[in-house]
Amino acid sequence: MTDNVQMIEILPSLLAADFSRLGEHIAEVEAAGATMLHFDVMDGHFVPNLTMGTPVLQSVRKITRAHLDVHLMIANPDQFAPMFIETGADSVSVHQEVCPHLDRTLRMIQSEGALAGVVLNPSTPVATLDEVLDVVDFVLVMAVNPGFGGQKFLTNSLRKVQQLAERRQRFGLRFKIEIDGGIGASNAADAVKAGAEWLVAGNSVFGAPNPGAAFMALRETAHSGLRQLA
Ligand code: DX5
Ligand code: ZN
Image 1 (cartoon, protein in one colour):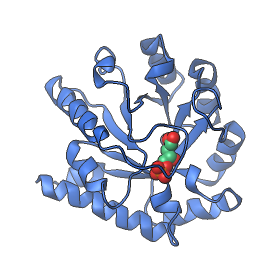
Image 2 (image 1 turned 90 degrees about the horizontal axis):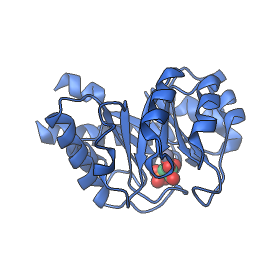
Image 3 (image 1 turned 120 degrees about the horizontal axis):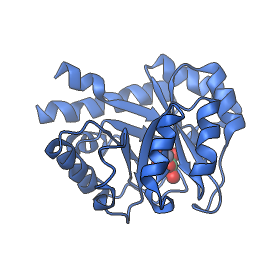
Image 4 (image 1 turned 30 degrees about the vertical axis):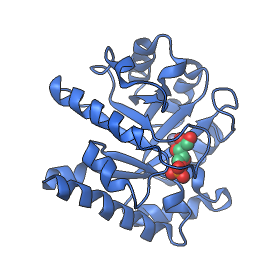
């Protein structure tokens, strides 16, 4: 089980941080053991909100060696993914719903030097990814409708994580399963039990009085899910 325990990652979502104290917040979660950070990019078209772009990523890249996981909630990821990779993204995920040439987009991200992920909205079935599961490095299951932090966790997402984990095992594939939206103490263990390894957490980490302590508590809860599997 030791190997599996090491595989679980909590990814603090910078969207929930206080942007006037971004550096401090990143230092707090890194001191608590975070090695991956989640970076939400929204364009006001694909989702009804605007967030941050490459200038913010550039500043973040300068102050951390953590893996930067860029979640593109934008209508034209083919145009912008290379800029984010050039700026320092270690992984980039694109939404299935905006990629008519998904295989090409994923291979482009990999050829630019980042891990390539595909994201499923709550209403998008897992089966839409069957032909790219051998290409992707990770699949991100949205547990909320994308656009805002602090929303309620949708439990159907756990069934989708299970479906992905089944396919991964059946076909002998190695992609990671990430889950994003509404993750906290009440569902982190369930997400791990369903088969997720990368758990994005915004408000449950940065909305807490002590983000470092909240990160560690959530990581412990996630690991308790693994122990229940054993
Ligand atoms: C929502 C974003 C999430 C968000 C999660 O569209 O993709 O990454 O930051 O925030 P919480 O954990 O607060 O739901
Ligand atoms: Zn996200």
